[in-house]
Length: 155
Image (tube, rainbow, N blue to C red; front, side, top):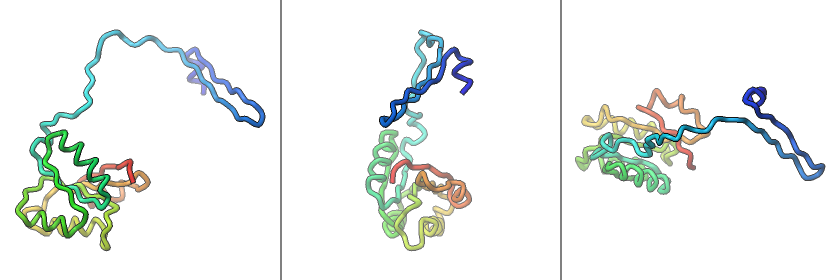
């Protein structure tokens, strides 16, 4: 609370009985420099250009959102809903570079089972598997199972 006073500002509350309260704060700052700074809104598309990415998620909204974003970075994206579709795609000699797997995948054995199935195919034994983890899950729990974790802000 002392930070706003140290910056030449203040903090106060306006309250009306029965209607609620409004908390206010004020800080003093200096104007930003007039120079224009470069703004990067997209990562280098070269990183994912022509990479084949498999998205495994039973929620098609997640598939569509990720597919649209990855394709904007020139990746080649395949989407499937379950382990059976995943294995059929991988057995067709499609050369996949990365798998994004929804941790809440509707599989009786769970998404770790899918990881083990995919890694049982010799040419995919070292395939990077990235888990899509909901905000309310503890991602540290899955770091020893998956290559990496992406926290998804959608259900």
